Length: 96
Image (cartoon, rainbow, N blue to C red):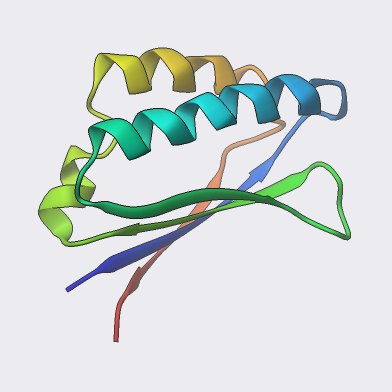
């Protein structure tokens, strides 16, 4: 069963450009290294310019368990941490 994730991220106002550039690299890492990932896309809120949502889907729990394990993923995602204004809010969903 496919697993969906919605991650809401608040970004520091002065770090928006840096965040978006690093996240584009992160999306490429996921697409190229995680065959069990169906999609991994970043969206910016129309109402709050510093709020982003990551929409993700994995083919199954095994694919989700592999998500983010590569050294390349860890390297790129470490750059994102300094851009955030707080901890991400993450919600998991099961496909119907």
